[in-house]
Image (tube, rainbow, N blue to C red):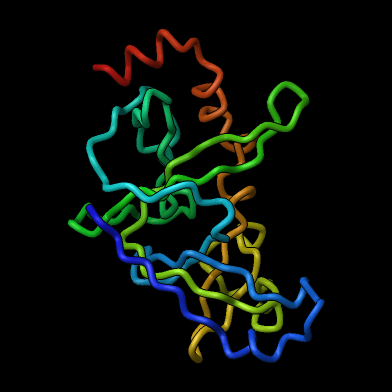
Amino acid sequence: MSTSIQTHHSSATALAPAGFASQEPAQYLTFMLAGEIFAIGILAIKEIIEYHSLTEVPMMPASVRGVINLRGAVVPVMDLLARFGRKSSEITKKTCIVIVEVEAMVEDRQERQVIGVVVDAVNEVLDIAPADIEPAPAFGSRIRSDFIHGMGKVRAKFVILLDVNHVLSIDEIADVGGLASAPSDRVNELVAA
């Protein structure tokens, strides 16, 4: 599957004062979930792959769809809609897995964890200036406010910018952490099955 990703430059890019890196737009990958537009900072994204069959792992929370074998590594795959407490979307031709890298505490040290995220469709990469990002709403959102980094204003609409380190928190989803630290022989058996 070949996913076309386009970059659109915000008009704020030209208005940002030279030498102020904090005013530079950041890039976000936008994607669809249940008809809503969400985004994740591009620096957390490793790749986008076609959705294919997952290996289900017994006794995982509903938000963990299973695991995939990504070039020899066992990668847990999360269902964001289930994580938000909503019904999962149907799998279609446009469904794909976004591979992200998050920070996790493992045995009192900070480590990077690779996790797949199922999305309905990938849209595009956008540049969003800090001035175009509003704080997360305190109410009215259908997902927890600590999951939201902010609300990006793009073409007169809002895009929900997710905080991947909170949404995909290994601390909150202990079973995913257990999978990551499970004996590799057992996990490899599950993936090979």
